[in-house]
Length: 114
Image (cartoon, rainbow, N blue to C red):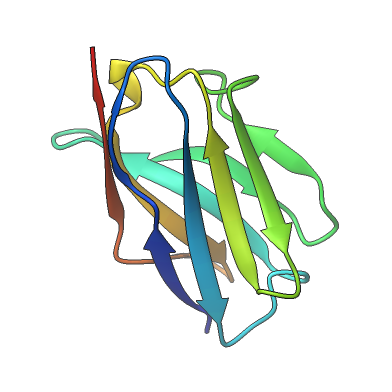
C-alpha cells in the first residue's frame, strides 16, 4: 500500500497560485492511479484531479483550466499546481491513490481569502 504525505498548503489571496506536493512511498507513482481530492467541512470529499498510470489526466469541471496534476518519477512525487485560486477552492486537500479503493494522505489545508 502506498503511503502519501502532502505539503505546500497555506493561506493565499484570491487570484494567486499554490502548488501542493505529495511524496509517495511504497509504490511508484509511475504505475499507480493517483489523485487529489478535497473536502470542506459538512461536504463530501470530492475528486479534484487524477492521473492514471499511463499519464491520462482528468479534472473536475470546477478546476479545469486552472489546476494541473503532474508527477515526478525520480522524486516519486505528485503535484497539484493551482492557479487563479478562488475562495470556493478553500478546503482540506488530500493526496490519494487507488488500489481497489481510495487511500488518502493526512490532508493539508488550503485557505483562500477574498
